[in-house]
Image (tube, rainbow, N blue to C red; front, side):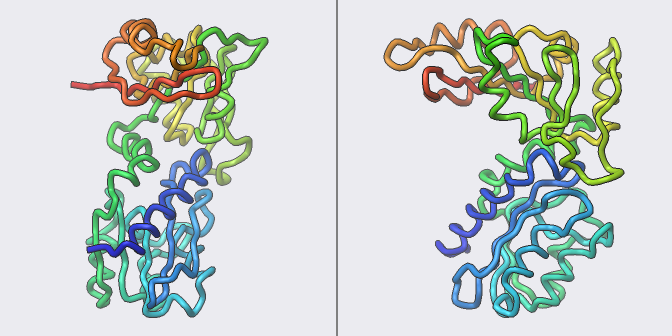
Length: 293
């Protein structure tokens, strides 16, 4: 069982893993915290982009010799293969950690998997630690692996237009690989944020068929895509593929009436389930996920 210190470390690892959103694709956004043998945090790190060091190596580098006999707390099972960087499970073995906690198992892990190799090396391994919390960051990446297409979010502010901007899109864009703008153009969420030779901004048009558009986005290396604006030809093209809605509706409690706003914004987009309602300045943010049967 994870100790309170280890749970705190895992939540910290999840939080810092989000720093890689919008730049790690096609790799996953991963965070890692190293605790010394007394349970004190001595290093942390996250994966920024493909080709750069992974989260575990960055955290071990920060920890130095203090990692020996300690615990590595990581949001995704350490990788088990030689790619552009060495396997992370070997870095953990070489650092002589005694225990590794992981939140989510890696479906792309090669061979018997990093966790098993760690166990064979005599390291104690605990799986599934705060898995559901870690999926808040890793969920879209896993969705993309499972479906073979990007996870798509459609976000807009009710009443926003090209002149006054769109608060929700401006806030979110840097956490997505690609942003499909209301004027039909496509941009990286973080300009030049991805690794070289692993990602590109696709050429327009995406095509007149949803399947072709999704293939084009996938081939570009995108795991996550943000569609901006309530009136958008791309949104209409990809409407059936949208996985999440984020809508900012004018109004603040107590004047805001959640039922009427939900009815207006969600029931017209059939197949979505409301999962969040929260005040945000002079707006209320509605978040909904696609219910696929």
